[in-house]
Each structure stands twice: as structure tokens, then as C-alpha cells.
Length: 280
Image (tube, rainbow, N blue to C red):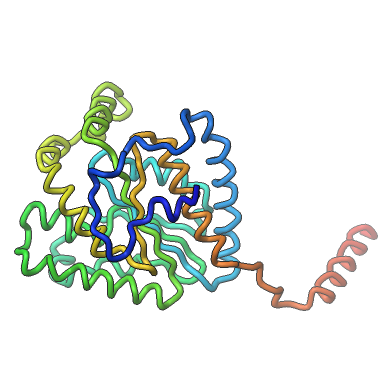
């Protein structure tokens, strides 16, 4: 399966999430079938991120969006943690502060975009301003409806500066969300994740679905594509995200840079030091 092609939202198309099965798992029937592939991809991710850091020409922005309990944290923990923290950062975007609200909606986002050689993961993102803001009517339609074009321009600016952008919507069913809420209630180690908004936001499921469909349809572009990842099975979610990131990074054809020093001279000095140590 070509994961990029299969799960990408075709630019210019009108997406309907109801037509996408959140329990899809390809030819894999069980987690055990996917585990070896996931581990292989994790190792490849570590190698590719090392190359990106060393080459210092490209950067990668990964955007994660989902409804509550969709698996954003799990994706970071089980897939993207394979990368070295020295060259990879995670930025989360919660309710804007008063200072952030005094600026345009992208002001708080741009400083977190990755520089050359770096990978940044957005756990929630600038898309909250056409999702939460829209659903809760925090701004009139005349305001938020203009933001799709602003987002596309912002992402085009990042892409023109060498940033590869991958955006993942982790697609779960309403029934799976409820089961994950139950797990949070039953497991003391997860009780801290429970919030009042879990159930109040659930009442707005259809509104959020419509908002996501518009955002994914209007903002999936060639330089910053959206991918809808079936996420009812956490292991398949991990496999699909890892595979798309690996395939994309491999396509950058990165190479280890040439040394910036005279290796012959360095080797000569090294062997001289070794000989001195032996004499001592």
C-alpha cells in the first residue's frame, strides 16, 4: 500500500469523513502483524532525522489534530519519540493567552516553526482557529472564514523556506471515543486526563466533524497535505503515521555532509596522540 497516496486528502476535493472507516487497518488484522513494521520504521525515522540534522538543509513540520481522545499524545509517544530530542521538539497549543489574543492568530504559532535541520511536532495547531473558534462561535464567520487562505499562505511561506509539512487528522469513531473515555475513568493512572469538556465537547461532534471537513478540504495542498488516518486501532495509526513520515523524508534524498576539516591532518594528529599515550 502507498500510505501517502491512500490517506492523503486530494487538494481541491471535498472531504466527507463519514465515508472513511476509522477502523480500517489494511491487510493487517492484528497488532502483532504491524509491530515489526512499526519498529523498523521507528529505526528509520531515527536515521533520517539524524541525516536532516547533519545536512542542515531541510526542516519538517508535523501537525497532529484530532477530536478528544483521538491519540495525539499516543502518536508522539509511540512514533515520533524515536527521533533524537536534540533535533526534534513538540509544541502544544492550548487556549490563547491575553497577550496572544492581542495579536493575529498566527502570531503565537510562527516562532515554533522548525528551523533548518529540525523537526517540530504541533500537538494541536493554528487549525484550532478554524475549529474551536468556529464551533464555539468565539469569532463571527466573517472572521474565521478568511483564515483558511491565511493558513494556506502561512504554510506556503514555510514550504518556500525548505520546510516539509505533513498534517495528520487522527480519525476515530464516536463509539471508540466513548470507550477511551471509559479507560480514563477506570485506570487511576489516566484519571488526570479526564475533564468536564470531554463530554460537553462530545455533544458538538457533528459541528466539529463539519469544521474538520472544511479545514481539511480547504487546506490540503501539494506543499502541505492533510492525511486522514484511521485511528480506532492505535497500532495501525502508529504504523500509518510512521510510514508516511518515513516515505516523505526518504523523498528528500538527504546525504551526510562532507567534513569541514582536513581528515588526513586530523587522522595524523590522532595517531600521533595515540603513540604519545603509549609512550607515557
